[in-house]
Structure formats: structure tokens, C-alpha cells
Length: 480
Image (cartoon, rainbow, N blue to C red; front, side, top):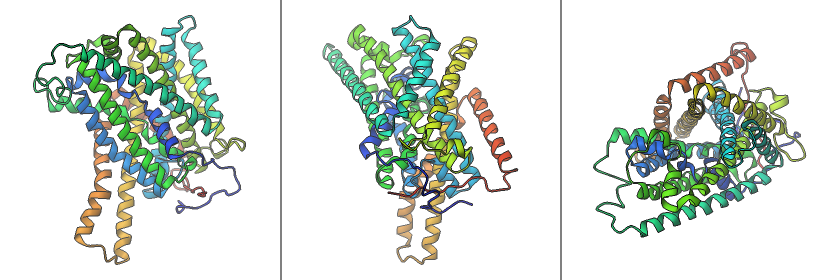
């Protein structure tokens, strides 16, 4: 049986500390996504959308805003570290909540793993004296140690990373302006072609690029896992989630707009797609900017890896406290710093072992191993997104039913239509869009995701003797 919102499960046990302001939440969210999020995937989007990168980023922003609104609204009702796991379990069914939580675990533990591997590769370009596995050990340990120092330390470190990356973004904009200033002529439609180029526009190609551009926003959902450490979570989680999506969309659009003014709509060679933005930076600002952008992508990967490890620890805590995972280990809070220490360490160990295994697979499969890992991450992410949108729909239906039972006098046709447009259309649109993107993932990613989900569902079935006994509970922490 699930509990009602506000139930106190263990008043005497150590709890997470409410220390994060709205500003902290926004900064952590931006770091999880990365202020330079579109730089790594710019070449892929450009080739797929035939140069219309700005348009795909803006369309993806609108699509993700629907899901961001659903996350924020559900956090108002259930300000819990369990995030989507709690929302779906409370509003739809505990079994579906468990499945959603398990898919989120896949997303949240794969992200630090991939970031550890990428950071190690990028650092080898700067300091090749040490082999890959030494850097893997270093970054997995570095992420873990900083996250073990407490939530405020993590938040302050994220603010420094964000400030550094924003400085680089400003330098890039300066280089673009200097490059454009030096051009003799611009030609007709020069400044509008990044939005619409009649010579290359194709609606199907545009949406093919949009399905990749959505990756720019992956990570905003991690804000909701910090609900139990946020001040005034019923207000600040919604504001932070929506603000992060909007800020990321505007900043990313400006970055790719400047890049496309420099490069134009010509496609990138297949062997240069991953380094497309770096090539553009070299064209705009020379070899110095080339190396600066390379280093900044490394810093961004460090921030993203730390942020998602932080969120993963809180998600595992929410599931452990609810008995979806072994409670004695995953549901424990270290009393001094009031953090889920066991979970942080477990994610760090998984990142260390998994990134090493990923490198071995990459040696056999080529770069495709990293692509499969990234798409497998999206497999779990979009299941969680669909679950949150579905729970927002269920929450609205229940509230409307209660309104009718109470014979609310405001229940007019006009009022009903207004509530549908405000409260129902965003989660419906978010569910449909996320479902479409999930369906378009590659088959290898779906196979990896299916294996992960089968393992989790099998564990749940054994734990509950075929789902006949109570699966999990969703007790809510007290609000301070």
C-alpha cells in the first residue's frame, strides 16, 4: 500500500539536509545539462537537419518544456528524492513506479560512467604520459570524493564550473563577432539561414535532427531528485526545472547560431562529425580557441559526471527508503554530512568498472560502443519522462473527479476547457513526443535497455513473490 503525501516514515532517522536555494538548483541543473551542451553533438544535428541546427534546438526546447512542467508539478505534490519513481508509484501503481525508478537508475548510473570515460579520453590528449585506466581511476575517485563532502560543497563546485564555462562561451561569442566583422559581404538571408534555408529545408530532415537535439536537454530531470534538499521544494523545483530548460534552450540556440554563421550549412565529413564544433572554433578564433574549446568540453564532462552521480545517489536513496532496493544499504543516510554515502560510493565503483569495460568493448566494436552507451542512457531517460507525464495526467484526472464530487460551482464548460489547456495538454504532448523519440532509438540500445529492464523486473518479481505482496512504499519525508 502506498502512503498519502506528507506521511513521515522514520522521524527519528537521519534525513537529507534542506540546504539548496533556487539559485543552487538552477546552477546544478545547468551543470547536469552543461552550458555547452550542443557543442558535442553539433555535427550530427547539422548533418541530419541539413544545417537547421538552431531550429532543431528551439523545437526540442518546446518539447522538453512540456516534460519539465510535468516534473515541476509532480514535485509540488510529492517533494521526494525518489522523483519519477515516487510520482508514478503514488499516482498510477507501485509496480509501475518501481519499473520507472529502475529505468531511471539505468539513466543516472550510465551518465557518470560515460562521463568518466570521456574525461579520461580528453585528458589523455593533454597528458598522454598516463594510460586510459589511470585516468579512469582518477576521475571516478574525484567525482566520488567531492560528492561525499556534502551537498553544499557539490553546489559550490558546480557554481565554479558553471562560471568557467560561461567565460569560455563569452570568448567564443567574441571570436564569432570578430570573424563576422571581418567578412566583406554577407549575402542575402545570411543572418536568417540558420533558422530557415529554402535550398536545404526538409521537414522530415528537420525532425530527424530534432530527435538528436533533444539530447541537449537530457539531465534537467535530475533537479527533482534534490527535492528533499531544496528550500521550499513545492515552489522551487518547478521554477528551477522550467528555468533550466529555458536558459539551456536560449544559450544553446545562441551558440549554434553563431557556429552556423561561421560554418554555413555545408555538411561535415563523417570522420569530423564529433569534432565539428572544435573545427568551427578554430575557423573563428584560431588554434588557441581550438584548444580552449577542447579543454572546456573536458570541464563540462566533469561537471555533468559529478552532477548525475549526485542525482543518482538521491534516486537510489529514495528507492532504498521505499524498499524497492535493499533498504539497509541504499536507504541509509550518513549522519554527519547527511548524505546517501553508500549510494555515492556504489555509483563511483560502477562508473570505474563500467568505463573500463566500455573501453574494452570499444576496442572490439570501435566507437560504436560509446554510441550504444549514450543511446542506452536515453532508453531509461525517456521511459522516466513518459512515466512522469503519465503521472501528471493521472493526477489531473483524479483532481477533476474530486472537483465533480464536491460539486464545485466553478466547474463550467469554459473553466473545464481552460483547465484542460493548462494542466492536461502539456503532459499529453510531453508523453507523445517522448514516446516517439524513445521508439526511434537504435536497436542495439533497445536490446541493452531491455536486458536491464528484464533484470530489474525479475528482481522485483522475486522480491514480492510474483508481485503478489506489497512491492514498495512511497513514504514522504517531513517538510521543514
